[in-house]
Length: 397
Ligand code: SAH
View 1 (cartoon, protein in one colour):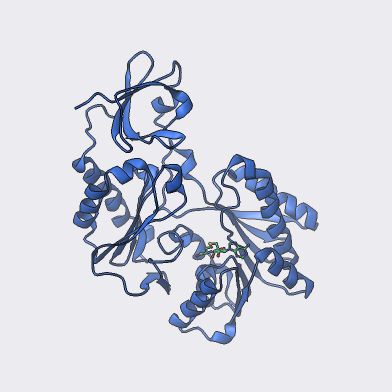
View 2: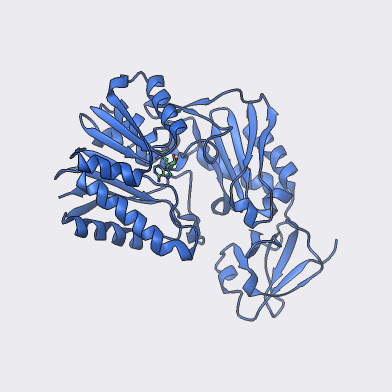
């Protein structure tokens, strides 16, 4: 086999020695051989010391994503099998997943498989290949997923923007087993959701918010709930199941709101208890404030406002604005569950943004719980970038 080796610049091995799995272009001194996209390369320090083995990604700023830090470990089908088996075994034994039939099986870097996302919805398995390395191993990955997870349906949703950064075209569709002909009906605690794995967001559902949706069991009983950025109703449907008096969903997608309605129906909730507001949440929140509506619980779960450092300032303003609006809808003693899934907005910064909103609103806000993605979305300790979702559950004073 040709020698494909990436030599780092002097002193640039520090992050790899701490087992961080990315090599940026700026850290690379030279490459021997001509690795193809996704091919496995050895990574060595300037002095020749072996550091790691990873996937070459010629189009990306993240030029190598590390598969293994063990020199004796080959990257092959067996390697993928071991990693997927290990990740799947963790979920199987996870006591927090006992009351659901759907979870993330493989969480990319945090499961030692950069660029591979695998979600299970009952018997349907949906995967995303988001890096040149994952794409290179596509056939082997499919074989491994079929063997380990034994899905009735295997479906691909490699159709996210991040593929472009890796020089890859989007791909989605049926892979094996029984083709999907409608939504998958999943269970999460006391409720059921219909999940559209074919055209829904990500692989179909925001599995990462599972534990936070469960907060509704304690907060929503008898109350009026505002579910802003509702998507297919996740938080609100859970709130209705917990006995909320009413739920108002806001989303800019009419289709998502129809699905929220469908999910309420699926759970036998009285349609009179839901209100659907289609439009830009920034405006809808203002409109509710103008007519002096009040809610006992407000959930803000917006899409990612910040995708690059250049968007930080604008994104921060966006987060502050919706939190300010939400506060105007909450009486003393009300609850605000506010989230950011922008990785670049770190927890401390997010707290500051929310604190600034409270200051402008002239309200006291007490953080009762720090929130994050559920345990099937682990964050590998050596990979802080894995922590993208953060939230605050606040009591309003
Ligand atoms: N809380 C949901 C996930 C929310 S995803 C759950 O638990 O399943 C974010 C949602 O915000 C998407 O449905 C998207 O359609 C919606 N959205 C994006 N920008 C918006 C805007 N400006 N106003 C209202 N909704 C918006």
